[in-house]
Length: 380
Ligand SMILES: Cc1cc2nc3c(=O)[nH]c(=O)nc-3n(C[C@H](O)[C@H](O)[C@H](O)COP(=O)(O)OP(=O)(O)OC[C@H]3O[C@@H](n4cnc5c(N)ncnc54)[C@H](O)[C@@H]3O)c2cc1C
Image 1 (cartoon, rainbow, N blue to C red):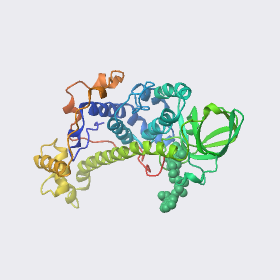
Image 2: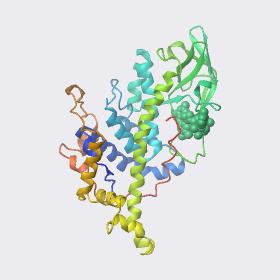
Image 3: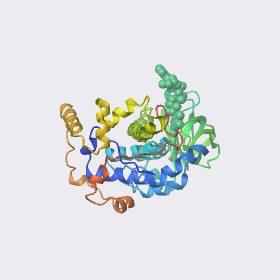
């Protein structure tokens, strides 16, 4: 199978640092070697490939842009490139790391007590513990302010009652961050798997996001110690801030889907003329360059590894005209040691920058299910 070599019509790669490109290459390698071979069957079987979770942890992909507790402390751009590559394999894979990192680890780090951070963050970073984020309810999705799930205090405990649905990783999670209405506003509670009165059940038969586990949660007289409430999350702005974190990764993921679509298209462009004969293929032939229009030039330029110099000039003009600038050098304090990420050491050597920016012809199989899908609405 030909490997994915990248798509970069606007020469955006030239604005990434070596470090950012290394992170992308690490993620790309993982996706090609470990994820894509599993995607088709996982999609068909409607299962998340849990066997990859320890590896996601070892590579620093869980809570990747968070600091401390063993997290990789990636910059937001590095984290975005990671999300882009994972989503290129399947939206469910990106969704998995978004929920774990942005929707559970981030709120524990931002709003949790020291005890909660110590209990969960290192384990979640390594993939030893999984989390889910319970905000959506059967009657309240876009408008979480209407939530019906309630929590009432009883001595040193809180008692939760309510239902959550469409919860990514719900039935495989060790801890659910459940948002509930209390007399003092909406608060977040860390509910551990196995807590009496708490249950999670998987939703089956999705037409999209099939590789992602999606579940319903039920709380019925579910009693948790007061120490399970996130002390600093008060009001709806706390869960909404988590959604902002997740949406950042989702945005990058969309580009990953486009990269995959383009790789498939390039393969189709090459195969279709041979299959279909000459008639009706003029548009495709345009891309090959006989009398290319603007789009054709762009496709051709990207295929020829930048050999189309006009593409360079146009891209540069666009960058200059739009006031975009090269990234400033990172302050020394922001340099991080990625020695702990084995793929970096194993697959990318200093000076490999050219390889990771390659634009050469490539193809990508399109038979791995329709795993790219409706990332438009879901939280994770
Ligand atoms: C695969 C998947 C994973 C998910 N994972 C999670 C998770 O981990 N945790 C979690 O809490 N939730 C999760 N969700 C739920 C997700 O956040 C909700 O689906 C989303 O908030 C939309 O809510 P809804 O499905 O109830 O749609 P609705 O709110 O019923 O909306 C239906 C349609 O109406 C439109 N609409 C709604 N209100 C308005 C309005 N006022 N004006 C104009 N248009 C409007 C919406 O844009 C949408 O197109 C997940 C969903 C999916 C599909």
